[in-house]
Length: 393
Figure 1 (tube, rainbow, N blue to C red):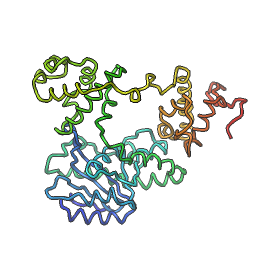
Figure 2 (figure 1 turned 135 degrees about the vertical axis):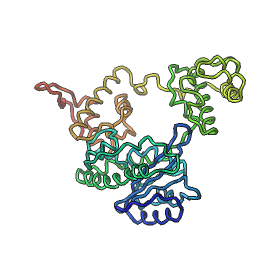
Figure 3 (figure 1 turned 120 degrees about the vertical axis):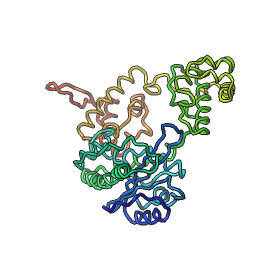
Figure 4 (figure 1 turned 30 degrees about the vertical axis):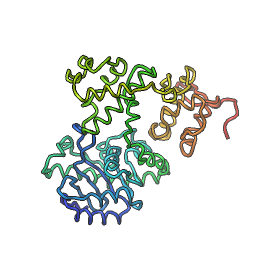
């Protein structure tokens, strides 16, 4: 494989992307920093196929990333290969408003091949390629220039191994007939909606004990305000206000701005500064959360109830058994919320009742819920047994 020197100019990038566009796939990785910023600070792009690999410096003076972004977002003829690519895709989305498509994620493919639910990249490389990765540059300061040879070699190594992994995993998927299992997951990951940070929804990521409409209304207002403050200053949310402080203020709102000086987690300056005034304005404009937005009281699922919760536990046990028999990661087959919805009586719109998931698990899950399948102990082992009720066709 040909390894290029660090690409720092638009012409070299254009030529590289033209060649990559002729191939069937391109492996993609990024190096970025986000400890001190709201937006990820992308410091390096790495790309490779079976013939060549390169690192691209987005911080190089005058470089235009349009050829690369066009290849990743607009070229439907080239498959984009990532490993646990959520943050890499987020970076592309922030730069373009689009997401790479079509795409393939080797971490999800590993789930279909029975290699684990969230297998790490180094473990996957070791298990499939028999190589141990050098992790020495993993926590380097990627924003500092110039980058040294060890940093660049480490970064490019990620995509050269990825470009070697992909064909091997694809062949195994074809051999086991599981390639189609991944289609829905890949489309879900590439959905733009996953990467839009909506301030109106930010409150859902904050843990809080109360379920009162007025408290949650204040939480929604405060979380949305914090999101906009963090964006405008390009600072992490926690630098504006930590989650626990946000929840505390929502539950125990200060009477006036002067009282902010006594709130744990805020500096005394908040009682007189502009950010404190903006926060108080957000509080003043808060309205009780509408009933339609209130979270279900039973965290285990809407309308699940005590008996339904027991059924959901049995479904999770069944999932574990069937996944072990099929040598597939349970999480790829079904998520807990779907099992709880099935236990609560829902039958429409569940992925486990469609396609390959129904064949591998959903049919048995439905039979268990509806009394046609039961657990039994035989010879000291847990087994499934059909009841005398009519089974599903």
